[in-house]
Length: 117
Image (cartoon, rainbow, N blue to C red):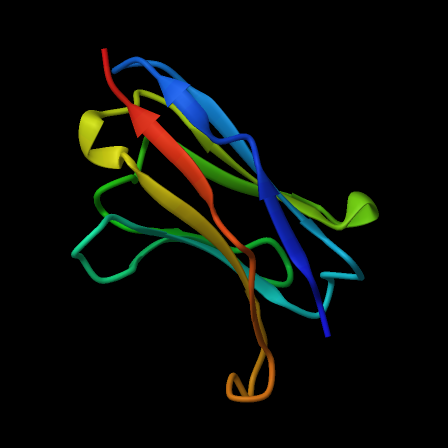
């Protein structure tokens, strides 16, 4: 099992930046790591994924603004969020997963990001 703890959320102004961290209790080298976000009354939305080997994918809504990266030595994944918009306001969740996902799917508790002037 892997336990995930997110940090780095908070209040940012439109156009500002935040960096989220996802610290794992064990090695993340065998997992893909995704970030998701959710606002009240809406379904959870996928944001970005980094896979074994370093390949990354982004939702269209954040492409060009957010960067996902990993430091396997620290068992930590980061989400650098730039050019923040009010619509980026959400609780952000870290998710470690591997196939079969039904047996290998772990989530953190979430961290709140609020973008407001």
